[in-house]
Image (tube, rainbow, N blue to C red; front, side):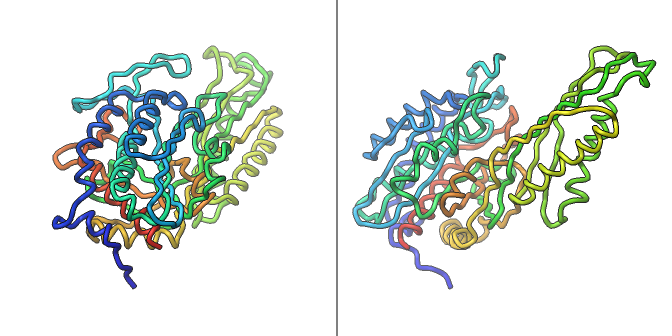
Length: 416
């Protein structure tokens, strides 16, 4: 049975009534341009945070800064009592040199892990911030009509804090983000270059994968390449390990439970005719299940035990848990899908599939019911590269449907 749309929600797409989204859109696009042209890396989003805090204060919101180093939270209290709803945007950029024709493209340079790099919003976080700030502006203009409270979370370090630092969603929660006022729901979005502007993709249940890191050092015995029998070859052992790890998803895990084990770094050797002492491997594990994570961690250790013993080698192994998998609450997702169809039209709301990339919004959605959607960002007649590439290009026109979608989701949840 379809739900009734609140009167305020009707004004979001009915020309005869005042349209708060159109009212705020020009300033939000200007904000996006400024943020895009001045990106900052994870845990270094100082200018971005100051700009966001200033904009939220102009809207009359209660503003907290310095959460998880550079995080900002704006709180909008409606004129009537009601639930607390949270909306999240990520703030950080990537060590990527932008290659686009946007007149406000980034030319920023910075230092990342000791190297000079270009910096760009190559994952669309500038769009996310613009949508969430636009939602805050649209709702603030009608705060007296709202029944409840909305928390606008601007989160640093979604891409991961620098080595040796804490940050991102886990640190915000550790510092008490949801302790005083726990939301009944949290909403987020991601720019998606697979779809044109105006299209939204939704998924119910597991939506984005966990992201773990494995580090392995294989220790053999150095020898001349012509006399391998005098040594223990860690390169041959590394080849056996890499192949054996692929049997975990293909032979140890139910085929209905997707999993990926990828080795991305293989380092070893100093000279073409010397068998080295050590080979270093690093990789990532992606799953949609805590129990599958546990199984993969265990099986990697068992494989290393067996192969190293057979080769006469030793090893070191660490399994570092990263983001958990992102789960869209099924009940909230079903409701959200109907709200989005009512707001944007059935032809603009697609049913999507889980993807193996990760998102630390998952930490929030483990604390409270969450819904995370994908927003098409490619304008007709333009092209975009993939996420995290120099030629990723999100269009300004994606901001308006993003604001309408997010505002509708918040209003519907407050209305319940």
